[in-house]
Amino acid sequence: MSSTVLILDVDKSPQQSVLLAMTNISKDEYDVLPGIFDYGVSKNRKHELVITTASITGDYHNPDALWFQFLGMGGRMFRDGNNFGICKSRSNDTDNDFGTLKQRDKAWEDMQDEEFFCRIGGREARLLLMPTDNYDANTHAMIQVFRCPLRGIQGQGDVISAQDMDRLRYHTRALADLALKVEVIHKDKEGKLTQVARIVLPLTKPSVGIHRILSDVPVEKSFLSERHNITLCLVSHPNGILRLNEWIRYHQDIVGIDHIHLGLFTNFGEGNGEKAKQVHYAMNNLLFKSDVRKGALSVSPIWDEDFDIQCDGRDLQILSFYQECLYRAKGTSEFVGTWDLDEFFLFNITGPKPSISEFLRTIVHPKCQDWSFVTMKSSSTKREVPDGHDTGLVLFDHPTRDSAMNKVWLKSIARTEKCFQNSPHILGACLPQGTMNISGAVAMHPDAAIHECAFMVDRAFMVHARDFEPGGVSVETGLIQSIKG
Image: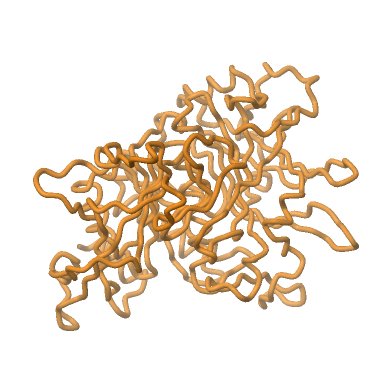
């Protein structure tokens, strides 16, 4: 990164701690996300920013770095014409009706001209809008990721002190009740500064909003010390809880994935937030407590049933979660992948199989050693048991697969430092070899010869288990059966 950080107020000593006691923060002040925030008026039109999730993270490749980021809903999410559906907001005329969003429809390109800053204590730094260029047109310019460098970024000023960074790095139980308060500031064309939002991030779990980490187990170490070889972004299907245990066990115990970030799709509908919380609790504290406790599994909601904005289907919500998963992985992991619950990774090599991280580190491309992402083809398989005779395991219900590979269901694994936009099949906004400035990020495709830093690999592929979902099984039924089983 080489964008200039604007320090607007340097009178306050950078040595003064900006960490706050949670006991001094009210619930209303803490519980602000997801939210809709005014940030200005132009041509007699009010502009509003929809922030779904915010977090602070470290940097896997730079132990001295600290970032703040938030996810905004882009204008394309509220317009017809994309294959992912449309989001709607609650009408002002009634408490129950939802209509298309009229006031908050600024596109990603429009937001490039808006100036936002993050303020902590008395120091401010520019919030940078992350690029979204992708060959998958359905994902481009949907989610607005704003990122603010807080400390340790080359060419940037430091917003928090070295002492506070040490407190974050060597977090202990004594600091468990502390938080960081970040103000989002907008600067209009006349130079006027306006506070848009004030976001409180607890040090124990520094993510708030829709895609927050739900784990309730005790946190023994700082989030800055969390390290994984690879994070896998995974979304459960509406009734896919029954399949989770087999999928997680296979990819962790056999393939060697050491961290999975699960987006839990409940889809109970408006007004059922409490019901969703019960499922979240069961996932974290009953079904997968041991995985959560040892740091191998993190669970986040896909959406908030009680938020004043709801989206058709689930593709837009999932795309939002994918961005949170990617940016969290930038702080914890060397590699990141985004796969589905009906897809299973398989090596296409004879002899002993390496772990997936060993496999990735040995990939060599003659024209690009500093590659951005690799992509795998798929082989399909279908359920081969009569209805009502499912074993509940893909291994037995889908015993054979097609010998031919296809490029219909491409899946990728990226280096976290190289790409800035996540999507279901290929990553976007990736850095060419030798480039470290995000202004040089481009869309890459593994079949496009002009981008050697994204390419196909033949030594691994994905098995796509078609007809995977057990029909007529609700989230609740799947959860109960999983607990009993």
